[in-house]
Length: 630
Image (cartoon, rainbow, N blue to C red; front, side, top):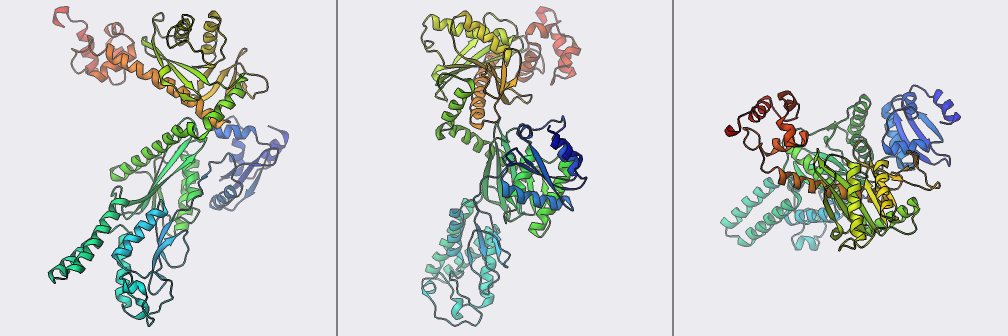
């Protein structure tokens, strides 16, 4: 920490406000708000844990400034405006600037119209939405037009107007209020039907039309009855297009998040009148290590500030836990209520259809995130990642062929390894290989890594089919120990290939590469021979290494599970009462072998999660029966 920052920290007031972090070039890095500026700002420069994003940001701070506010509520409003103004790199930003369309009913006019609107104004009109696309709005408007013929023109029509009727009247698309063909009362009744329709009351309008159809049919007015029949069909079609699930008679939004090692995706459902009328998702690049609460709070501030209709309730898939986060939620609810003009609450869905909808939102967020990951190769990002990788590792050329290794085991049994191959950054599944350890008989990741590499490169030396091509780069799951072990094998085989370890953080997310790095690369000292390159500053490279590590792990763990199921499909545990496949697997995973289970005491068996006292006593008794009684 430089001397200027130390002095500025001493002068911070114990008041609410907004702080702005800047780098040496005076670029805004981050904007935040605080209930107590002194406590919040000082926390950045103390030995307290932060997310990866904030840790990187702190390392770049040259100086900061702050603005004192009268209340935390005022600070929230100012923070939101400054984030929009500066778009700081290390804030969680809602980058999607698309405007969502609405349906507007002009209740401020004597003879209201229904139309598409791009934004909400306080003009006395009633708005419905947001809808996920203009197509959805136009489809809805077409259906309304076929059912209820509100006027389409922009004329300023008064109750006593007496103009000539236009073509719309003659072709049945307008009741001609401009020339007194319909009273204000009857026209208002039509407007009420449109509003009921847009509120999701499809059945009520459909039933009215059905009654009219039957009435016309009984009067032998079959042509008019057919018109009503077609209107009913139009309503049913629109109802099916718009309706995902009927939840309740409420208006609310449901927000959920899914994350991978690098990115986060937020999905929101818009529910009006109990029906899902729209949905949208937003990608937050590089926010995979941020807390869900942080992402949701940033989303709410930015999304609902842009004149979006604020519903009475917003359901989120996680609520704040710390006192500071709880206070933030209260301030957010106060602000949302003011924007809405009525009470707005932030809640979690606990049960029933709302919980199902929240689960559906999370599932859709996961799908959108997976689709982004799968499209990673097609938009040039993989090539960019490989170019960065070449620069970071100081390779002679772009690593077109990469081999990655991972070890998996169940205790001291089912020790296996995976070899996955990436060619030009794309998984090359014909090159995948599975290994079951032959030399290593106990859990030993370093020894297992050496065995699989020795076998793979012995196959190369022997020119075995499928092993004749050497990779440009080897990546192993693990840190310096695995890298050193791998280098020993290649030295033994007299093969020169760069080797680096893929390291995960304490939450099992891809964090860094470990190995030899040139001095011109910004790295962290790890141990005497190796250094660690943290990936979070290079999103494309981070995504790529994460995908490689995940694929190697997936392939290894799938093979391990298959081996475990095969080995223990039939065992001495099968004849023990109340011990099924699940508990059998749990026991074998915990103890590592059948012999260890056989020799375990009741107390040791009880220490296994999922094993009851009755289970433990049955197992203990079974292995101590005379052989003929088993």
